[in-house]
Length: 220
Image (tube, rainbow, N blue to C red; front, side, top):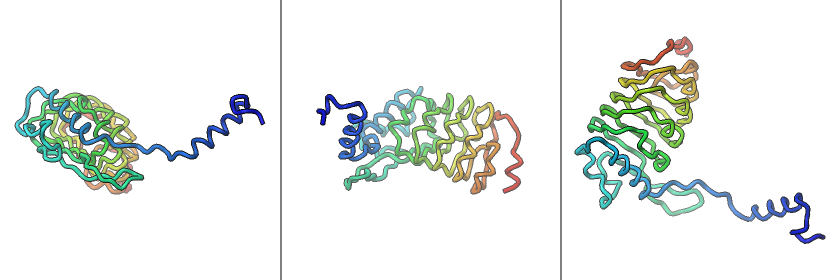
């Protein structure tokens, strides 16, 4: 048999496949608590003013004790060791004036709840929020100053059960991708929202969204 270096490309491919089979698949790893805290501190620094509620957000303070921040223990797949991750941000009526686009959602992939209602948060609804948070269940952004369109990526929030975007400055069409969120309980409307069989409450007031109320809602 020819040595591996002189073997055909096909034989080399087989050899490489056998070699890789000895190694376990690489699992997605959540960012560390330090990385998560760093993302929140960077977002705090981008606010036009520093609300009193964010005074506890400091490097020398345990992030899980920060005002409005909640944590849970997480066990990485294939390991037994638990470690804390940030799972919730709740800052209702805290005088926030920053933009969501300045928050690094990739570093906060463990979030299950974002409750930032009744603030003055400006800018667009960031597509990264939708594409980076697979476990997000509650997204409450009502009574802010968000503008522009709702991105199509919002359809990736498959775990979402609560959504409120009312009383913002959102405009444009409602993305049909919202119809794929079958766990949704509260939120805006797509044409095929009839698929969201658990929807019980719908908040759309205070925006400039276009289109018609889909007749599919009446058939559920």
